[in-house]
Image (cartoon, rainbow, N blue to C red):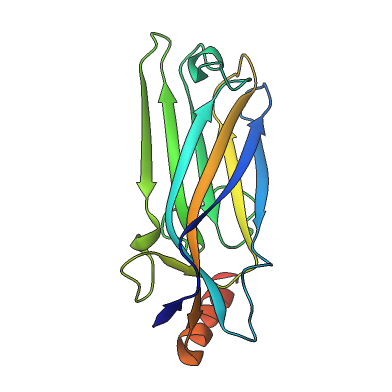
Length: 175
């Protein structure tokens, strides 16, 4: 289905969630330099990691959420304008961090890129030129929280039929 043009490389983006209850923020990762419709060039996403930090790089996330609360972050290949359900075809990956006042925490990545990958055993093919990130809090934040998203990807060339099928699927999911 795909011919790899590059070895895996890492794309990163940091999102900063300001203090406040039920706050959210969004960011993008530009793929325009990697995706080429004319050459049927796409991105194959192999893995997505989320790193949760406090207001500064050396501040533990517990300092940002002194009360019970959680952070939810999602990566999509279409701009939905906010959080989406797990059955949305645009959803690539998501993660949640749950904290309690006693210092307990859990981090759960509930979707991996290969879960919805069409025909790929290694990852998810993306033909759109932008990835969209959404970060949301459900608690009153005592300080700013940061989430860094690390996407491991490769550039691949798809055959014409496969590229068209993924492009149509992505366009259909946009409606």
